[in-house]
Length: 261
Image (cartoon, rainbow, N blue to C red):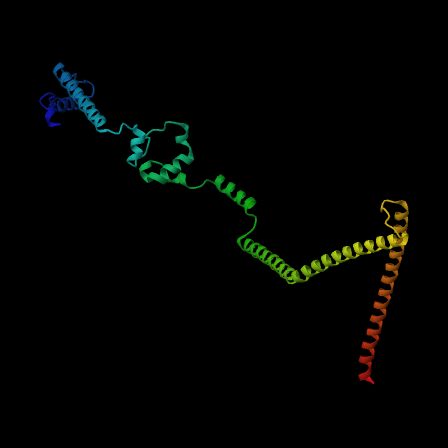
């Protein structure tokens, strides 16, 4: 600032202010009116102060190379963005709490606003009663019970899978047996029909077309007789099987009773 002293002289004489003060103290009724020279000196002093403030603001603006807005520059330098509220949002309780949380006492916010009000405490308690109706011990018991039920369900499922795996080979063998039985029955049925067809042809003694009515009638009669024989054979086989079981059961009962005699 020294390089501007030649162009902008600074007023340093305050004698007129002291004389003005003394004149005011001498008499409460008569007020001394400053002379024209004194008024001019005061005006020059005020103008000099305004020029100093203008120069300070000018040079301060030149120092701001970022071209940021004042509020943004304050944020960069970790200062409060606004000195005066610019919107209704800046008067809200939430904004003031956030200011105090970030800038502390430098924010100019009363710390008492950071404590919850009675209404907020009541709302929070009501929310907790609805959202979390169980105590911590009850919640732990419920979680432990759910875990035990889930573990038991998994264990039962694993036991069921292990049991099915143990029976897998037996089921596979049963399927193979059923397939083999079906194939054997199909083969036997085919052989029986071929045999019946051959018997019908031998009955006529000459080659007869299979579409002939006589051939069809005789073949149907042969098939009926063959089914009757198969039915009697199955019945006889069942009877023999039952008799064998009864004989085996009687033999087992006799062998058990003999030691008691």
